[in-house]
Image (tube, rainbow, N blue to C red; front, side, top):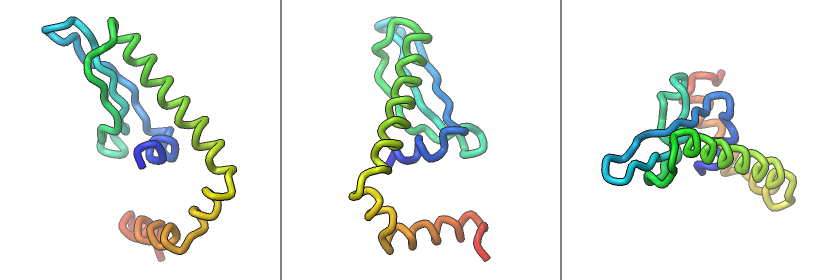
Length: 103
């Protein structure tokens, strides 16, 4: 689900780094939503990167890889069948109603 969340809302994705860890001097990477989606944390790593820039670049790579995966995955018959299923349609209708975008 996190992969779909990232790829569906690319415009609000922020990649960032935190650190350095006092014990190791390493940095952690983060992928979050922006303010318009309440800055919700989607992905985080342990502090394993030597620099903040390396952590951010790793997170940008994760986002790019997920986008490529999603674009390819949406072309498969299995995914198209899932996206056309009644359960997904009901979930989409509920999400739209909760957002106040319905009738």
